[in-house]
Image (cartoon, rainbow, N blue to C red):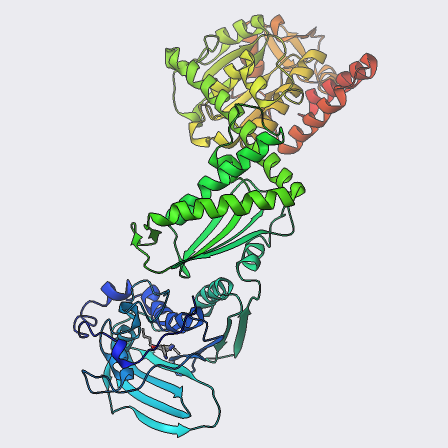
Length: 633
Ligand code: 2B7
């Protein structure tokens, strides 16, 4: 991509004049706001980058000057200054004052070129109050100045020098009658310059802010995009220290790819064509993705990481992927909404075969890295399958009719989550009492048959396939894990109501662990509660007083004159509808304990301890916890 060709004024074909640029600036630079303003800088810098890509320039200096102007300087060959055969003026003047003049329309001059719009320096000149171009060539310094695109004098020689250095320097002051803002943003420009430096290994970009406090940044990456992926992963935990890297050059096409996986679940594929960020992707990205999926599938199957017949999907192999794809294309066709999608169909196949070959070879030579990547993809596959099964289950339930809700659920009539409550009740008989006791408008009852599955011991697919858990999750409505949607929540309060005994405490622990593992947001957002039934009833004449713990009971017995009749509640089933309503379900008189995430963590730990085989410590632990649950939860 560095074959040097004869290049002079004759190569420059002039297509049309500058009329229209000032009338419709947005057509050329996108907007007259911040983006358009910064686009001016990119157009000028792109010319320097073209010189760098031609292999004849290694340093670009950009300066934000104190007077509000911008200078860009490169050590390329220097813009041609010889007389143009048609216009009879300096080539420099033609390049700066004629729209579309330049090598971009004469493909022989530059093998590849950046510059999305290809309108270049003439548009910048037309939208600048002042522009000054200086060229160093053959021992002379040439200079011309322009105002809104109009030359003020002929090109003149303003100096001579000894030595071989060549280059171009452009200084321009954006026209404040065109732009809504003319203040340049250092960080905004700096991000793009870093990107350009990554994409052109060895190119040094010096960026100086000379406006207030002098600032200076230098971007220079000998490793190019290999350093780019590492930089993109700088805040992540990478799975292999050395990125996968390959490069291929063919007629009119260059391909360069760097890949490094991290332990996250997202992917970040940055793709470029002639240093232009192809945000919408295109054929180069498509070819890469196809090859990546195929190579990792082949490898994983060969090594028995996935079973025969199992297939990793694109999303599986891209989980945790960071990649930079840089292509140099001679005649890029840009498509899409923002013209940032590569359309050249020939690139897909070339990219596919280059990636297949290079990645296959890398996997053979680096089996540890290859295994890590293939294993991560296979984990993604299993997680995806588990999630799919769970979703299917919910969908199947929905298809059963009755709004898809479980048959055991006695739903409330209000559909407003902010005023509704779901009581999860231990046991069929207590469930029946609760159904009779409740406020039908706002309170729904879901009775549980015995204990639910311990989610600590089973994988998601199995847990979500169990009837009790599926019923519960269907009633709640939000879905689980990644598919959790708070806006689908059907009840504002989810209330666990169990007996004040060992089994009740165990069920409470199982439920809290389920919520903690599958729907932690419900707990975090304060939607999960534990109902507190009373332990005693005191009857004095016709009046009933309920007492929730032993301390309260002692106090109550002291305070009262006359001996009340004391009865003890053991289980919810001992109460009738009215008693249950009064003591545990009436929002005006009941006690609810809101479950915090710490409570849930504790429940989760408790379950882990309880997984042991010894029966006695287990009983003891549950008993202690049951007591605690009554009072503290
Ligand atoms: C398409 C036009 C704009 N141009 C050349 C040669 C070198 C060159 C330029 C440039 C911006 C700020 C400093 C090629 C290309 C015109 O034809 S423009 N360097 N730098 C630039 O604008 N930088 C050139 C072949 C042989 N000799 C010179």
